[in-house]
Image (cartoon, rainbow over all chains, first blue to last red; front, side, top):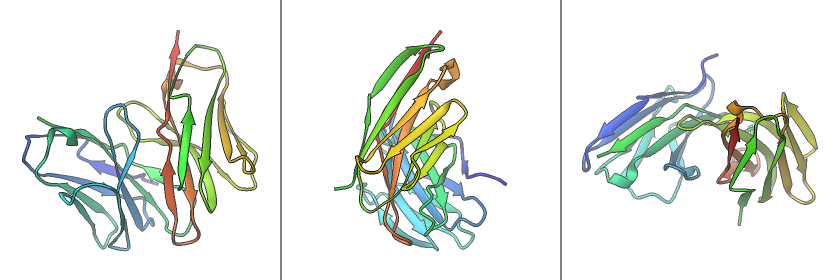
Amino acid sequence: EAGVTQSPTHLIKTRGQQATLRCSPISGHTSVYWYQQALGLGLQFLLWYDEGEERNRGNFPPRFSGRQFPNYSSELNVNALELEDSALYLCASSLVGQGAGYTFGSGTRLTVV
Amino acid sequence: KNQVEQSPQSLIILEGKNCTLQCNYTVSPFSNLRWYKQDTGRGPVSLTIMTFSENTKSNGRYTATLDADTKQSSLHITASQLSDSASYICVVSAGTSGTYKYIFGTGTRLKVLA
């Protein structure tokens, strides 16, 4: 069974540009979560999508946004990139209602220069 | 407030030695607790998952314990190897069906030296 896949693996952008990160959940999982992990820091919750809708949002500015598609894959968009947006962005998927934790992807390393 | 605290923040041990990582939580209602291992620059990988009724669970050289009364969990690593160098993250799931939240600890960074 394929795990959670994220693309691209690495992304380099210039300050002010937009970045789009993609995530494909495990087959059958309806929930997708996005996290930001700056170098040396813990995971910070960004967004939770389930059944195509945004269910919860972390303490991040509106330029962090996303969506979930009918096939449950998801995109994270970061507009007006700032240097401090440089981080590892992790996606995880789960079955809502299971409470059994979830599976992470390998992440996208975003570098803003 | 739901919180998960891990200690120590960082730990350095010699190859072959044992170590124990701690996770204390104030989460309600508790659903389950999971330990993840995260290699630098990679996504976290699940080591163990424990529900309210489980006290101990092992995965190779990793043994997790859970004391639901004191709201504490530990991850014990036996006969450490260089490849154990990573961050270990405790994640507690809170809530009831359909309303789960996942609360992350900030992790313990383990360095195993030869």
